Image (cartoon, rainbow, N blue to C red; front, top):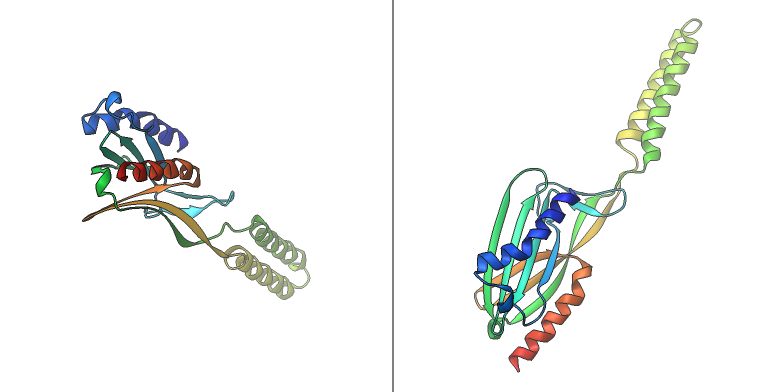
Amino acid sequence: MNQKVQWFRSQIHARALQVHGMDDDEAKEIPPIYIGDYNYRSRFGRIFKDLRYRASGYQMSYLLFSNKQMYAYKFNFDLTCADTKEQTKEYFYCDITDVEVIHEGIELPDPRPLKYKLGGIGAILLGVILFLSFMSGSPVVGVFFLLCGVVAGIILICVLGFTRSIYHNLILRLTVPGDVFECAMTSDNIPAIQGMKAKLREKKL
Protein backbone atom coordinates (compact mmCIF):
# COMPACT_ATOMS: atom_id res chain seq x y z
CA MET A 1 0.00 0.00 0.00
CA ASN A 2 2.70 2.51 1.01
CA GLN A 3 4.73 1.53 -2.05
CA LYS A 4 1.86 2.53 -4.33
CA VAL A 5 1.46 5.87 -2.57
CA GLN A 6 5.20 6.56 -2.71
CA TRP A 7 5.40 5.64 -6.39
CA PHE A 8 2.60 8.02 -7.38
CA ARG A 9 4.09 10.71 -5.17
CA SER A 10 7.45 10.36 -6.92
CA GLN A 11 5.72 11.00 -10.26
CA ILE A 12 3.44 13.87 -9.25
CA HIS A 13 5.85 16.77 -9.85
CA ALA A 14 6.58 15.78 -13.43
CA ARG A 15 2.94 14.92 -14.11
CA ALA A 16 1.65 18.23 -12.71
CA LEU A 17 4.06 20.18 -14.94
CA GLN A 18 3.11 18.06 -17.94
CA VAL A 19 -0.66 18.43 -17.67
CA HIS A 20 -0.36 22.19 -17.14
CA GLY A 21 2.11 22.55 -20.00
CA MET A 22 4.74 24.15 -17.76
CA ASP A 23 8.40 23.73 -16.94
CA ASP A 24 10.26 24.26 -13.67
CA ASP A 25 11.31 27.78 -14.59
CA GLU A 26 7.67 28.88 -14.77
CA ALA A 27 6.83 27.63 -11.28
CA LYS A 28 9.45 29.26 -9.07
CA GLU A 29 7.42 31.94 -7.31
CA ILE A 30 7.36 29.75 -4.19
CA PRO A 31 8.30 26.06 -3.84
CA PRO A 32 5.59 23.65 -5.04
CA ILE A 33 3.38 22.23 -2.30
CA TYR A 34 2.50 18.55 -2.05
CA ILE A 35 -0.47 17.54 0.09
CA GLY A 36 -2.14 14.16 0.41
CA ASP A 37 -4.01 11.74 2.63
CA TYR A 38 -6.53 8.91 2.55
CA ASN A 39 -9.79 9.94 0.98
CA TYR A 40 -12.47 9.68 3.67
CA ARG A 41 -15.13 9.42 0.95
CA SER A 42 -13.67 6.10 -0.24
CA ARG A 43 -15.67 2.90 -0.57
CA PHE A 44 -13.81 1.30 2.33
CA GLY A 45 -12.21 2.87 5.38
CA ARG A 46 -11.64 2.09 9.04
CA ILE A 47 -9.49 2.84 12.06
CA PHE A 48 -6.69 0.33 12.56
CA LYS A 49 -5.07 -0.90 15.77
CA ASP A 50 -2.53 1.95 15.69
CA LEU A 51 -5.59 4.27 15.85
CA ARG A 52 -4.89 5.69 12.39
CA TYR A 53 -7.55 5.94 9.71
CA ARG A 54 -6.85 4.24 6.40
CA ALA A 55 -9.08 3.89 3.36
CA SER A 56 -9.13 2.20 -0.01
CA GLY A 57 -8.86 5.56 -1.76
CA TYR A 58 -5.96 8.01 -1.59
CA GLN A 59 -5.90 11.61 -2.73
CA MET A 60 -2.84 13.71 -3.45
CA SER A 61 -2.55 17.23 -4.80
CA TYR A 62 0.30 19.35 -6.08
CA LEU A 63 0.21 23.14 -6.14
CA LEU A 64 2.49 25.10 -8.47
CA PHE A 65 3.01 28.86 -8.34
CA SER A 66 3.96 31.17 -11.19
CA ASN A 67 4.25 34.94 -11.06
CA LYS A 68 0.50 35.49 -11.56
CA GLN A 69 -1.26 32.15 -11.13
CA MET A 70 -1.58 29.09 -8.98
CA TYR A 71 -1.83 25.74 -10.78
CA ALA A 72 -3.53 22.89 -8.92
CA TYR A 73 -3.24 19.23 -9.84
CA LYS A 74 -5.24 16.58 -7.96
CA PHE A 75 -4.83 12.84 -8.38
CA ASN A 76 -7.19 10.26 -6.89
CA PHE A 77 -6.41 6.56 -6.96
CA ASP A 78 -7.65 3.38 -5.37
CA LEU A 79 -5.30 1.15 -3.40
CA THR A 80 -7.41 -1.94 -4.12
CA CYS A 81 -7.74 -1.59 -7.90
CA ALA A 82 -6.44 0.37 -10.89
CA ASP A 83 -9.02 3.22 -10.78
CA THR A 84 -7.51 6.70 -11.10
CA LYS A 85 -8.80 10.23 -11.66
CA GLU A 86 -6.98 13.47 -12.48
CA GLN A 87 -8.18 17.03 -12.03
CA THR A 88 -6.46 20.31 -12.92
CA LYS A 89 -7.31 23.90 -12.01
CA GLU A 90 -5.73 27.29 -12.71
CA TYR A 91 -6.45 30.33 -10.58
CA PHE A 92 -5.20 33.90 -10.73
CA TYR A 93 -4.06 34.99 -7.28
CA CYS A 94 -6.45 37.94 -7.32
CA ASP A 95 -9.41 35.57 -7.82
CA ILE A 96 -8.71 33.38 -4.77
CA THR A 97 -11.10 34.69 -2.13
CA ASP A 98 -10.54 32.18 0.66
CA VAL A 99 -8.11 29.48 1.79
CA GLU A 100 -9.45 27.22 4.54
CA VAL A 101 -8.28 24.17 6.43
CA ILE A 102 -11.47 22.33 7.32
CA HIS A 103 -11.76 19.79 10.14
CA GLU A 104 -14.44 17.18 9.51
CA GLY A 105 -15.38 14.42 11.91
CA ILE A 106 -16.40 10.90 10.91
CA GLU A 107 -17.75 8.41 13.44
CA LEU A 108 -16.17 4.99 12.92
CA PRO A 109 -15.87 1.77 14.97
CA ASP A 110 -12.71 1.47 17.05
CA PRO A 111 -10.53 -1.62 16.73
CA ARG A 112 -11.87 -4.23 19.14
CA PRO A 113 -9.47 -5.27 21.92
CA LEU A 114 -7.97 -8.69 21.31
CA LYS A 115 -8.92 -9.83 24.81
CA TYR A 116 -12.58 -10.18 23.81
CA LYS A 117 -11.76 -12.50 20.91
CA LEU A 118 -9.37 -14.58 23.01
CA GLY A 119 -11.85 -14.65 25.88
CA GLY A 120 -14.61 -15.86 23.55
CA ILE A 121 -12.44 -18.65 22.16
CA GLY A 122 -11.45 -19.61 25.71
CA ALA A 123 -15.09 -19.75 26.84
CA ILE A 124 -16.03 -22.06 23.96
CA LEU A 125 -13.04 -24.34 24.62
CA LEU A 126 -13.91 -24.49 28.32
CA GLY A 127 -17.49 -25.46 27.44
CA VAL A 128 -16.21 -28.24 25.17
CA ILE A 129 -13.83 -29.54 27.85
CA LEU A 130 -16.59 -29.61 30.49
CA PHE A 131 -18.96 -31.24 28.01
CA LEU A 132 -16.46 -34.05 27.35
CA SER A 133 -15.76 -34.43 31.08
CA PHE A 134 -19.43 -34.91 31.98
CA MET A 135 -20.45 -37.02 28.98
CA SER A 136 -19.72 -40.34 30.69
CA GLY A 137 -21.53 -39.58 33.98
CA SER A 138 -23.94 -36.67 33.49
CA PRO A 139 -24.47 -35.91 29.80
CA VAL A 140 -27.24 -33.38 30.56
CA VAL A 141 -24.86 -31.37 32.72
CA GLY A 142 -22.23 -31.64 29.99
CA VAL A 143 -24.60 -30.27 27.39
CA PHE A 144 -25.53 -27.44 29.75
CA PHE A 145 -21.90 -26.40 30.18
CA LEU A 146 -21.31 -26.70 26.44
CA LEU A 147 -24.23 -24.40 25.67
CA CYS A 148 -23.09 -21.93 28.32
CA GLY A 149 -19.59 -21.89 26.90
CA VAL A 150 -20.78 -21.40 23.32
CA VAL A 151 -23.22 -18.61 24.25
CA ALA A 152 -20.60 -16.84 26.38
CA GLY A 153 -18.04 -17.21 23.59
CA ILE A 154 -20.37 -15.78 20.95
CA ILE A 155 -21.20 -12.82 23.17
CA LEU A 156 -17.51 -12.09 23.80
CA ILE A 157 -16.50 -12.51 20.15
CA CYS A 158 -19.44 -10.85 18.43
CA VAL A 159 -21.06 -8.44 20.89
CA LEU A 160 -18.80 -7.05 23.61
CA GLY A 161 -15.92 -4.64 23.09
CA PHE A 162 -17.44 -2.53 20.30
CA THR A 163 -16.88 1.22 20.68
CA ARG A 164 -16.97 4.13 18.25
CA SER A 165 -14.83 7.26 18.01
CA ILE A 166 -14.75 10.40 15.93
CA TYR A 167 -11.96 10.50 13.36
CA HIS A 168 -10.98 14.04 12.40
CA ASN A 169 -9.78 14.50 8.84
CA LEU A 170 -8.38 17.66 7.27
CA ILE A 171 -9.38 19.21 3.96
CA LEU A 172 -7.79 22.14 2.17
CA ARG A 173 -10.40 24.29 0.46
CA LEU A 174 -9.58 27.04 -2.06
CA THR A 175 -12.50 29.25 -3.04
CA VAL A 176 -12.79 31.39 -6.14
CA PRO A 177 -15.93 32.96 -7.63
CA GLY A 178 -18.00 30.10 -9.01
CA ASP A 179 -15.61 27.31 -8.06
CA VAL A 180 -14.13 25.42 -5.09
CA PHE A 181 -11.05 23.22 -5.03
CA GLU A 182 -10.81 20.68 -2.20
CA CYS A 183 -8.17 18.11 -1.38
CA ALA A 184 -7.31 15.84 1.53
CA MET A 185 -4.35 16.80 3.67
CA THR A 186 -2.60 15.98 6.94
CA SER A 187 -1.43 18.17 9.79
CA ASP A 188 2.11 17.93 8.35
CA ASN A 189 0.94 20.08 5.42
CA ILE A 190 -0.20 23.01 7.58
CA PRO A 191 3.13 24.92 7.64
CA ALA A 192 3.29 24.89 3.82
CA ILE A 193 -0.35 26.02 3.63
CA GLN A 194 0.40 28.91 5.99
CA GLY A 195 3.29 29.93 3.74
CA MET A 196 1.00 29.82 0.72
CA LYS A 197 -1.58 32.02 2.47
CA ALA A 198 1.11 34.56 3.28
CA LYS A 199 2.18 34.61 -0.37
CA LEU A 200 -1.42 35.10 -1.53
CA ARG A 201 -1.82 38.06 0.82
CA GLU A 202 1.40 39.53 -0.53
CA LYS A 203 0.20 39.13 -4.12
CA LYS A 204 -3.03 40.98 -3.35
CA LEU A 205 -1.34 44.05 -1.87
